[in-house]
Amino acid sequence: MREGTDTAVKDWIRRIPLDQIPGIVVLLTVRLLEENQARRVDQQDATIESEYLLTAGQLSEQLNVPESWIRSEQRAGRIPVRYLGRYVRFKRSEVDAALAKRRR
Image 1 (cartoon, helix red, strand yellow):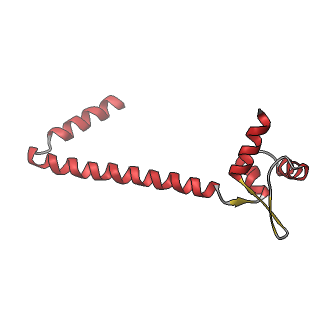
Image 2: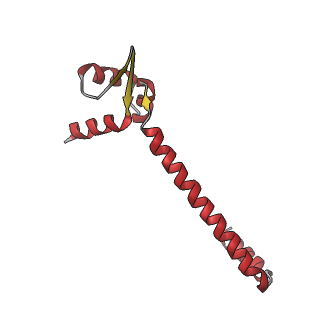
Image 3: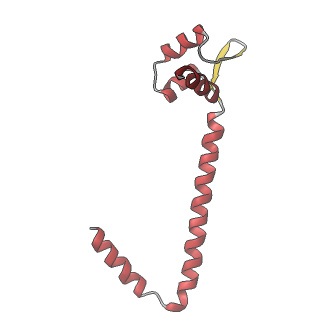
């Protein structure tokens, strides 16, 4: 399949008039830059999202552990917690740092 695709692409490229190649190169460059920009934005969004305050359920999903484990670690004081009135929230970066410290 790959060999047939390569042959088809080569045939298509040979049919491009020489005077159109610079324009195609510009279009491909713009597309590549847009893809890289979109990837950077996605990475920034992931960083920002990781700084949100999480519920115990959300944290348990991200860490792939039972919510009961999160609650017991919180009650034992082994992971940092933030109280917002009666609500309990966790900051992922703080929890990761606490767990890394415990592993040492």
